[in-house]
Length: 233
Image 1 (cartoon, one colour):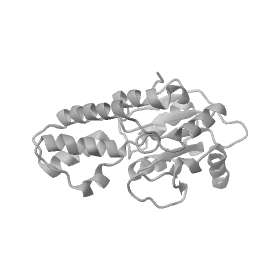
Image 2: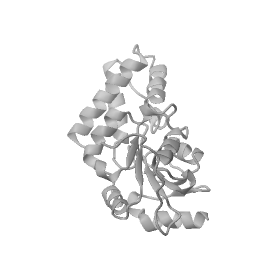
Image 3: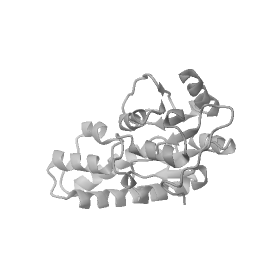
Image 4: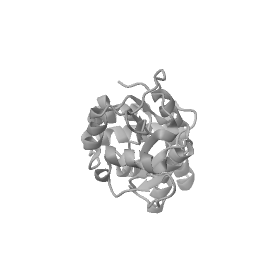
């Protein structure tokens, strides 16, 4: 299993300013953003509460503590944050145990990066127990390291996870391409100084400096990512 932050080793992609690719997990590589919302709705239904569909945009892409805390406050449910976190993680693990659909283009992109020996990291707000389960389907061999939301002092939207990934790979964050799907993840990547490719999963995200929006991962390949770095220079 890949470690969270290995000893820094300086690595670069020969002939390119691109040094590493850092990828989000839920909604970016695996089609699971809807899974989280379904589990949240089921758990709160069991507590006697119905979630407002408009809250989905508030909780998507965020750390477990923020999303769970918001839902407790919004519903007034009689449950602690720690208790709810356990229920949500258990429910999600059950879901992905039955089915774990990958996003279109995910396997092809990971295989291409591996074939060209591009340092790659999985950077997620999900907890370690969830990441390790998902990796069995994604393929742990594709990632030099993984960073979980419960293993950094501050998770997304703070830059800590992406800064930790860059440090672990021994690369410059400014020479990293990040692939994300939510505003929370984009904020974290941009705060870390990375070049960001956005594949929106739930809410619309607009292009901006150092941010490119695409329709799906099928539009993203190594040449595309290297091109972004060339344009940046």
